[in-house]
Length: 158
Image (tube, rainbow, N blue to C red; front, top):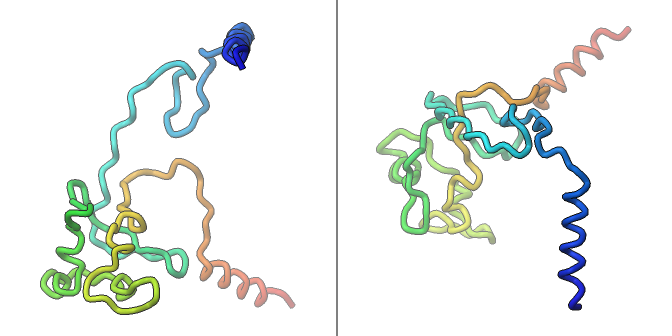
C-alpha cells in the first residue's frame, strides 16, 4: 500500500517524458484556434432571440421553446417569474399562453390548485433561443417532411 504513491509518481513522470505535444493545434470545435495548452477568452454570449413568435415543434411532446429573453428572471425555490404571465390568472391578464394543464397535475394525474413541484422549474425543459448560426450542419427533417417525401416517391413509381 505504501508503494502506491510512488507508482503514481513514476507513471506521471513516464507520461511527461513521453514528450506529448501540448502545443499541438486544438481541435476546431466550439472555440476554434489556439493550442491545447492555451487558455483563450470565451466568446461573447449571443443575444437571446426576442421575437415573441410561437415556434413549430419538431416532435410530439416537445416542450415549447421560450420566444423571448429571460435574462434576470428569478426561477428558484423562492419565486418563479415565468408564472407572473403564464399561470392561469396571469395568462388572462397578459394574453401570454397559459402553461399546460399537465403542469397542475401530480405524478398520479391528480389535479392540483398550484403548479406541481416537479414542473415548477421551467428552464429544466423550456429553453430560450439565441440568434446564432448552427455550429454544425443539420439535416433534421420532421416526420411530416419524411411522410410527404414518401408519398411523392410512391406517386412517381409506375
